[in-house]
Amino acid sequence: MNNFEYTTGQEQNTAMDSPASLTNPRNCTHSTEKPMYGSFTDGDLWTPETYMRRAIWDWLNHTSFEPRIALSVDKNPPLDAIIIRRWPDVKIHRATYPEFDAQDLSKIADNHYDLVYSNQILEHIPKPWVAASEMVRVLRLGGLGVHTTCAYNPRHGLPQFNDYYRFLPDGLAELFEGVKVIVKAGWGNRQALLYNLAVDDGHGALGGRRFCEQLGQRNDEQYPWHVWIIFEKL
Image 1 (tube, rainbow, N blue to C red):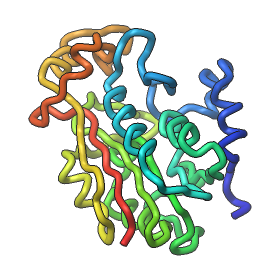
Image 2: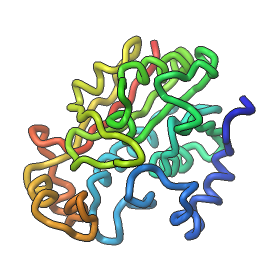
Image 3: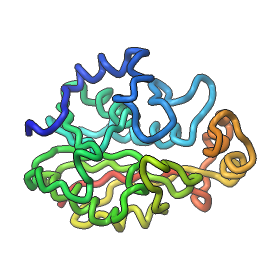
């Protein structure tokens, strides 16, 4: 496993809690949003991922599952923070693009990791069903998968990487075969989508992305923005 950058949860906690780490490009995902802690809000304002991150944290906080080694597909500070908050001693390896292509993780043995996770990358992968198969392959039997993506978002990522897909919760679940789906969910509402389209609150072409709590707590399955899945490998 010498090809991987990895830390223990305790080391990663130290790095991610320092203010400098939040502006260091090495610690950034492709998202323009900074990782958030505690309540997963930006001050008093909710983000498009606040509801989702709280839901994932709540589920993980109540499971008895105890991973020793995890794979983060690409760099995922928001999800890293949740994983490490729940399991401070977990060792995290990272398969980071372009050194690793999520569609070809052949350098990694089958059934190697207790936990495999990704955050908002599946929409940027040309063949996400191939990547999903690889993520399941490297997960051990009984291991846990946690993956998030979007059902809606303005086009983003260019020119560093392309933007190919959007997924409803059922579509996200269909990517992963040989698993038992435990959680399949989404967050969004019509008012939040309209706000995103109509308002620039400092995020430019990404539109309005900061909401009051009342809007952030409202969830309507007919208008999903972000979606996520938690599953166990069979």
